[in-house]
Length: 106
Image (tube, rainbow, N blue to C red):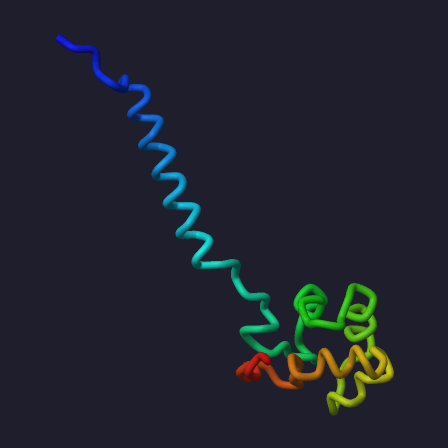
């Protein structure tokens, strides 16, 4: 009898590497999950600080300031807390009432 070209261990290793490569390529096609601010708007008067930090332009300190300054009657009341540039970045992703759909991302 001839010796096999590959041993059983080599066949198993090749099969494992092929499966791993296929899985890696599949996961790459899926891509990472979108950040929460891309899938829904954040309710300014109801959101937790962690959820507020997901909004562009709002960091840890800004989220704490927003929570302490609640309630807001209008989104524009947030501009003095964030400043004009950060307010412009955050505004499309914020809403006063919960459960509104997100705007189309540019």
